[in-house]
Image (tube, rainbow, N blue to C red; front, side, top):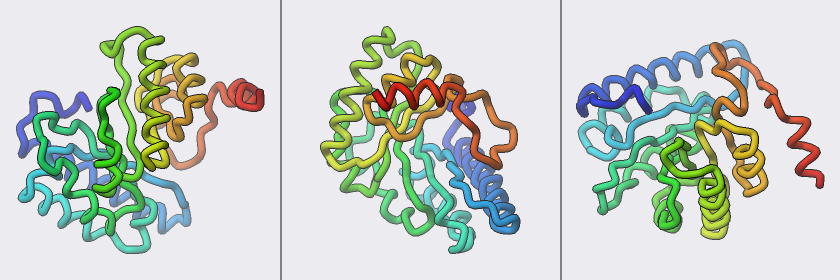
Length: 209
């Protein structure tokens, strides 16, 4: 997310297109090698919301072969908070090009999960940072977020940038499905296999109890 700070709209579109190009090459390589992994491709909300940029982005998406699309996940980041009209209008048209559309949203109690679901978003989540308050405040918000999302038929949820074992265990117990960040494992230069969570055994014992 930090890569996009202080960039104008055309620069953001260019960066999103370059990232998609890298992901497309990885999908091609995976198919050639017989590897079957999900690849998450981040894209700015601003790129997809504005029709002309969306069309440019979709043009490259449409070049990904049908056989590779089931392994592509689009992660929509940094929604423009000022938008009140159909902020996720583009999700349903994108569904033909990927397996899932993840939407990164703020960690708040007033998220409109009904709107997300009806717009085609099937997985919603948050990115954590220290400005959100104390760890206990964050845990309380995470519990509310996960339970409300599931109650309103957003079947799966995710957290990015999770940094401590206590937040990790709280998130798993709250029902979050996908976790990423330094508490899970360090950055993986070549993510071509399954990487074990460093506290996996501890967490398995906790869940059994």
